[in-house]
Image (cartoon, rainbow, N blue to C red; front, side, top):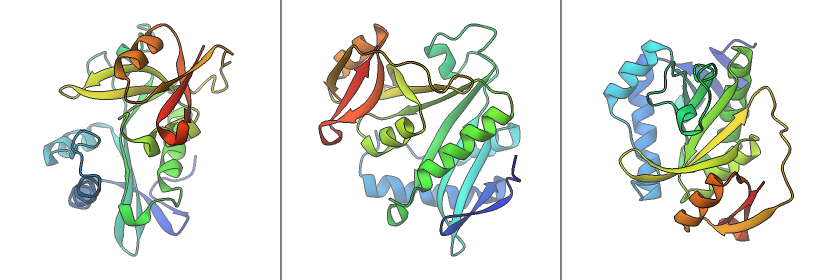
Length: 223
C-alpha cells in the first residue's frame, strides 16, 4: 500500500490528517454546510468528535490545494455493534468487527466536479481492503444526489434506509470488499428519492439501490 502521509493527486496533495488539522477540517465543514443551506443533508461535527476519534484509530485523509484543505474523508473501524452500520445491515457476529465505516466525505464548493470525493472514497476502499476489512459502509442523505452518485460509482449499493443521527433520513450504502461484483437481479423498479416509506419498504424486501434515474430525482432498486 502506498504511504498515506503525502501522495500527489489531481491538482492537490493527499495527506493523512491528524489532531493538528482539526481547525482546517471544521472550517471546511462549515463552508460546505453554509453552501448547502440544509443542516439535515450535512451536519458539522463538534471539535470533541475529532479530538476523540482521530487518536483512537479513525483515519482522515485530506486534499490540500495551495495550502488550503479543500476535501477530506474520515473512516472509522467500529469493533462492536454500537454505532456500527453493520448492525443495521444485519451482519453476523463474526463479521461485525470487519467493518470500515465512512463517517465523513466532503469537498469545498469551489473545488467540486474534479473527482476529489470519488478519489478519497476509492483510496479508503483500497486501504480498508489492504487492512483485511470485509465491509465498506456509509450513510448518505436522500437529498444529496451528488454523494449518492459517488457511493454508487464506488460500487457501493444502497441496502437499507433508516432515520439516523436524531431522526435524519439516510441511505445505508454497503460494499462487500471481498465480493465487489455481486450479481444484480433483473427485477427492477424506480422510486422517487423523496418517497422515504416506499424506499425503505423495498430495501427491506431485499432490493438494492444501484443507479440514479430521472435526472437524479429517483433511484433504481433491483433484486
